[in-house]
Length: 280
Ligand code: DHB
Ligand code: FE
Image (cartoon, rainbow, N blue to C red; front, side, top):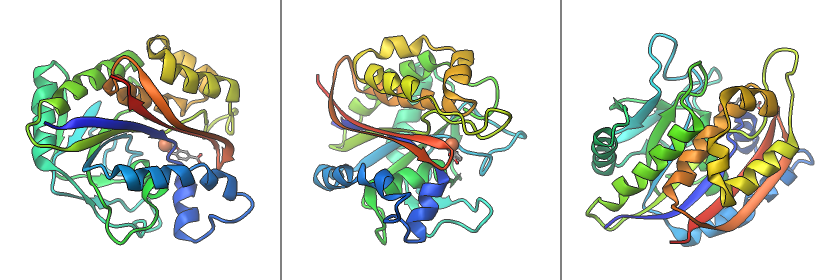
């Protein structure tokens, strides 16, 4: 049977992708950001997952106000890298796992979660930047990816509780797939940041550090955070952190913290990164 091997969360700041693509990771500004991923890359090389269920948000690259699903699952063989205005990032195409993706879609839909099935999907920095942070710059990604897009860009976003519940159902879906596969669940985005308005540049390290602590030990408390509280405490784009709750829901009751990294700033964001393993 397939098993949930580990959970990873990380910010997906587009400027991080640009720094990697332009060979700037060793500059004074970027070195402390990337230093926190050195352990993670070694850990990933040892773990060798077969599939990553990658929870991310599209930033008006594939979707638009004409069509904006709350939850969308990528079921295709391959996903093209989106052109976000400067040409597609120079990263390999993202290969999917249609059999597992379709199994998960069926299981989640029958578990009462409404998903949009994507047989064609361009993936943007929300997905490719985390891949670069954890795998570096290979000629081909060493793992299959099931993209899972959550609407966090336009009201009404789903609640954190719903994302957590979806993660719990996701674990049941993965563990009922008959093939022997090691599957990781990733949640991307965050941490506190605001890209617009009078509070542009807003960062709240106290909130972020507490979020990291509670993601490990008390996810139920995080499920109670309402949208207005995210807005007030973590900036207008901090709501991306509800995607981390999908990961945590898939890990079960208790987790073992493997690695943590937090750094301010990277572009306009506080960078947060966590690796956990299920403890049961
Ligand atoms: C930034 C962060 C994001 O998560 C994003 O999607 C776009 C920009 C930033 O910090 O610049
Ligand atoms: Fe983002």
